[in-house]
Amino acid sequence: MDWINKPCSLLDKVSEWSIYLIIFVLPFGKSIVEICIVTALVSLVLKRILAKEKIISENSNINVLLYLFLAASLISLINSEHLNLSIRAFFSKSLKFAALFLAAKEIINTRKKLNNFVIIASLSCVIILLDAFVQHYITHVDLLHSYPAFQFDKSVPQFLGFPTASFPFPNDFAAWMLMFVFPFCIFALLGKGKWQVTAFASAVSIGLLYFLALTKVRGAWLAFIISFALLALIKLKKLGVILLIVFILSAVLINRSLIPAIFSMTSINDRSVMWKNSVEIFKRHPILGNGLNTFYVNYMNIREDEFKYTHGSYAHNCYLQMAADIGLVGLLMFVLFAGSVILKAFKSIKAATDPYYYSIILGINMGLIAFLLHSFVDTNLYSLNLSALFWLSAGIMLAVVKMNKSIA
Image (cartoon, rainbow, N blue to C red; front, side, top):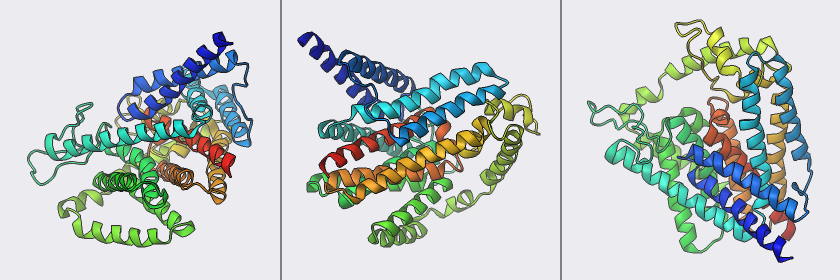
């Protein structure tokens, strides 16, 4: 049977390292992420076919909700006035990300693989934080893409701009940090690892919190505060004290010159216009939607300013944009899917006995909640690398839930 076992083992390694590479390059390598997703999927399918195993090992209610979400996305094409855009997006985005979620659950199936994933994700996180530090304090340009600090002005020495690291905007950087800050914070508090590991997790947590504050992304701040308060309420009362300390330090240490920018109404006014136009698009086909991936073009035609017919836009509210594209049916399926993933994780930690699994499940779950809350006021689910981060994180978390269940 060597002629089967050897290629199966090789394909397993290829799929495994493809997942590692995705989490590592995700903040700065969009094209590599896309290549790795396809590589992971193809190698997983080939391995399962050679081994005569089921490609998807379990058909859970969560998987069914995912399939219904994909079906709703496909049905929305009925109303699409830009069928080529919708069909391309279904295969290159919706189907690909759903497959990434399913593949992550299947591929990361041992503690050793999980350890490798955590180490590589941590290394990527450290690199991005160092990049943000260099961009903000030394070069004012990030080292990976040469992105300048947002709104950096050489004529104002005391203002260093807002850090973006390897992302084009601070909003994207903040969304990425929301997914990482909770796993590191919770592992530092509850992981019960060696002191060196706990110290490392604590240091990374401080770095993430520091740069999250510097981004001036109020939607991300609010999502973090709500999620942090929820965590303190349901599990860790002492986090409430930490949250109070964070507030006090923020008030004391904030650069006073940033206060006008922080409380500026410009972005709020812009979003109110975007949301109003988004509702008008949604009203056209509220049940099934106007067609997957048509929002940008539809917005260009419905807006009432100097950019009408020339520039489109995103809604800066992922759920409103989703409703406009794939209707209330599609939005409902996504909300049920995401809600089921989150609830399953909460149920799993009740029976968790291993602090390592416990902290990872709770950390990723709180990161997902914060990410989804931030998506009410930003474009997280419509950014390639951030959307990949969401689907990959959800898949990895359920893989850990499965491992935790096997030892419970």
